[in-house]
Length: 170
Image: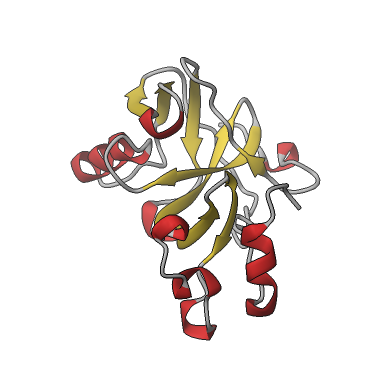
């Protein structure tokens, strides 16, 4: 087995983006109990402009009568693709990329010793991911530490209205 700690991205892991009709082979770097599960809100005009819900400290998006800033639950997972570490964000519902990994976990008790082939189809709200285990070599030993703390943006309450209402990204 090869240790991949020396291959970790110097500036920290980037978000993994899988284009429509693209397939990647990845390896999960931790079990699902160590994934980061987050309730988020997004700008309705720019769904990529996302911040964590701050419900317990006051949340501007939750206070809006309109459902346009509705909550969604996402999970962030550290993965290894082509020797580089990434953070892969997914919804937790039907069509999520983590469904195949969870099925494998139920059957085998772990997802760490398996490579997975992930295929994305569709666009926008019609996006689906299919995740299947593959016998495509031996998973590598990863001895680094991937921090998921920067996976989502935390916006202070007093700045949230401006953050969500702006159309351009910060």
